[in-house]
Amino acid sequence: MTAGLAATAVTSAAGYGLTPASVRPSAGTGAAGDVLLGIAGLDVSYARRSGGRSGPGPGGDQRVLAGVGLTVRAGEIVGIIGETGSGKTTLARAAVGLVRPDAGQITCAGHDLTRLRPRRLREFRRSGRVQYMFQDPLRSQDPELTVRRIVAEPLAAAGMPDRRVRDERADAALALAGLDPKLLGDRMPAQISGGQRQRVSLARALVTRPALLITDEPVSALDASNRNLVLRLLDRLRTELGLAVVVISHDLSSLAGIADRVAVLYRGRLVEQGAVSQVLERPAHPYTALLTASAPRVRDSGEPAGPRPADLRPPRDREPWPEDQGCVFAPRCRFADATCRTEPALLPVPGAAPGAAPGSGSAETAVPRDVACHHAGEWRQTLAPGPAPDTAAAPGTGTGTGADTGTDTGTGTDTGAGPDTNTDDRPETS
Ligand code: SF4
Figure (cartoon, rainbow, N blue to C red):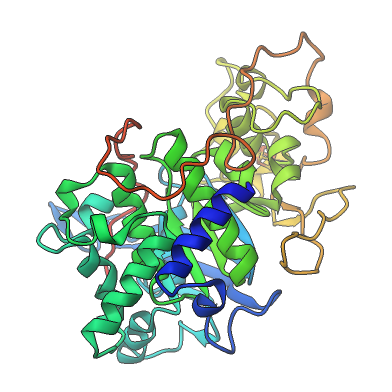
């Protein structure tokens, strides 16, 4: 993060009474290295639709997550990647108590969500100690409310009675997100740009001073300058406030810029996790390799480019892999053999040293480097050496590049791509 943005945002935030000290999470959460989110053995399934209605269908329930585990510590940014239908959004929703799991344990900011009764679970969600930033700000913001009221809503839900104090806190959160509350606070969502709406969502998520923030595609609808601003703000908040952040994203280059660790999901299974530099630059799982090979180079590390997508796909004439047998990735995996008819466990990557501990006040523990593949230590050697793949240069990543746009004071036009229409998983059902 450049000093320019930090200085601008801090100055603006301090002007509205919001300084790093004043937004620090409440005592008992957020100390550097504290585990804020612990997920173990998580199974989630949804009822299949039958005859156009939601309910158990003839095939039984659809399993969306199977045995997933994840740990997130104060001051860490953890990315979750995977294609549509991989279970990313369901995992995030389960982490904040929006989805009831079939099995497993979810500990969030000191509460075992899997054991809380519904009323206690609602109280926990309303407390704002954990916030979920939705993917589509236009759908998650009430068009009848002003920006200030939208941002202040979680405080009212948490039981803060004084409207004047709520408005002050909302203005401070808007300033922290790089928006001028005097100019934008009384506008309606339709009167601001897409980039501003995304930052309004961020301000709303921060207004309760959460210890853990879960964001679903936080920058997918933003142009480059807004994307950089939001990513740098997240980076700054985790550094200065000890905020733990989970970022669900298709944008590997953005994650490469800010995340400490990354977890890779494929059809509801955690297939690889580790330090972001290790996972994205030298994937141990063939699926992660396919993801990174299909994206623009995420870091210009000086290392030779990895395999091309064509190197990783099975030959066209191979016998179809029997459905639901063994490794979940086998039907698409070039390296599948008889061994893969047994589902691989998530184990340390053979021969890999654990990743470096995250910086910026994060956990001082080594980052685990795990993969679920029988041939994790071998598949790369079977690839025939060939000419260097013709891959694009790395685009600007979340940190260290791009202009510092500082506080946004106008309505402006967001020239970024339209909202991401990813419909990962099923809608919330509980
Ligand atoms: S276990 Fe086998 S099928 Fe699965 S990813 Fe590894 S090599 Fe491919």
